[in-house]
Length: 428
Image 1 (spheres, rainbow, N blue to C red):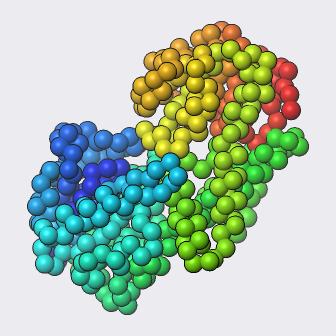
Image 2 (image 1 turned 90 degrees about the vertical axis):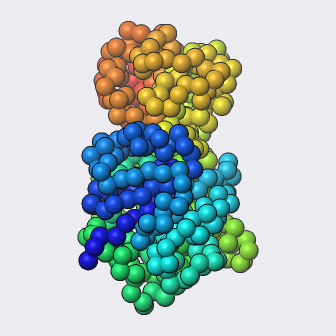
């Protein structure tokens, strides 16, 4: 059987990564994007998003990829994915209007046998409500993770598919494409697949909330959460890949969106969502850890302290700042003597702060250093070098990027998530 042509509409993070993963399987891929500058950049091998290995794979499989600003180019495809990122506001509410508009623009150019697949994260009921032939309309759950998106797109664990009739065979072209990845394919009704995506994120939120709650207890009682997490991962009921690393709340937008969706459903249908409200409250509390710790360790005694903040992105290996704990901290520090650095996010994101080209330059003269994003580059920082540059001796390193004991040997008071502070003058 001749290999089908796969199309992707929407050249944002989801669409670009998914298109490259399809090309890596040897399929001819047609990519449509409305932003001419983005399309031109992709044609030159320059993706609009930051992901490990994305630019390398984009260039390696360029012969399978074509990019166009003309939606009619998707008419040559056997399967077309609606793959634009869904924007959310500060309340984690999705704006689905751009996705509906994209679907409305794509449908008229499709050939009469093409399958249309919604890959965007949408609430239950969205797919069935689309005015397209239900036998050719599908919803596919995406489980990309910022910073690991290429890995997850090229080596998926399974495909969860929403269908009008899960008992019917998939269109041959769509089935051929999915089977090429060699993972389980799980067809189910539209609403089940849409809710399955939320279910995945709920399990992640539960793990994160457990880790954050007990990491704070560890800080209070003198335990060390990094000693506890490996024991939990050896429990088969939890597993070695459980999300048990404590962090600064839930960020990035996708998890919050699903929590908000279920709160809205609960309000409309009269179901109980108390645990969701508790998760959100726990996240908000944990996101304040850096601010509380900085106040207690530095600002309460020296309100004019000079603060260095390393990292602006909400997590490593991405340029996304959606709900970034770093930006939340900086909002509280606005007007102070603050210097920032991030290897990807432009310093203009925080226009009132001073910027530095290198991490050590940001630390020069600082009374306290906060590593707000766990970028791998920051692991190369030597505590002894910081001691020579900094005026103060306070380091806040929630993600344990630095060696805490080495920081103490260099004369620092070291604060991290999941255990009490250590080093000179360590306080509760």
